[in-house]
Image 1: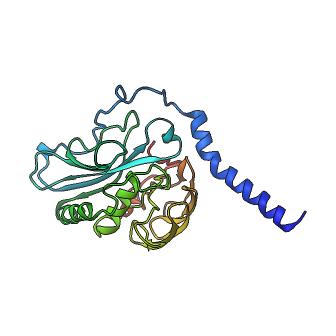
Image 2: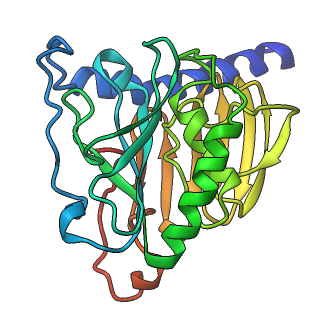
Image 3: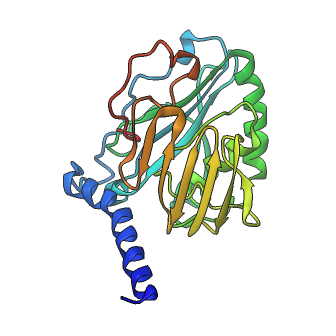
Length: 267
């Protein structure tokens, strides 16, 4: 067998492995094909009620994307509540409406059209107050405010990753299945969203990331495979994290928290 043929076979096998995660999710999916009009958008009860909480709050959420897209990816968003405010502001990007970027009053922890939310970050008090100022500036400066492309970006995850990069108070590792997070605004090199490492990306189609928070990720056509040493996990396309520690738990609790046998993005 010639070396080019061996390379082709190995590459084909690797791509099949990348696609195995989304295929498995699709096979086991409970998505009913329900209309978005009837899909659950109720609160999960994760966020503190604004009327009962004086301090400032910043939270980042993710949930499986609507319909078949949820086999591959999550949708992420940011919620903020200023000190003393009576409501949250929810910031995200969608592919509908006259402008992709949305900042509006609302409940921060609602299901994303039938899919339950997962809390990825939670800031309180003075740190949250500083973050809110920087978040608003980052939203104002977002370079793709009038653009949206579901794959490979810029999309909702591109937006959240951009904001996280601009806000030093947000030490967040987005799920590896947040397709679009690796779409960069310019060039091919950038800091990882958490700011604890760096990444190389060719318009979200191909790239590699190495950081303390995200671990190591290889991106091929938007599908990310990798390892996360901090949470003792592997990252698989479609499936997400499989590991012994919750990668979004407060790291100061890891020594005392019970082990988690399996953590899957946006369960």
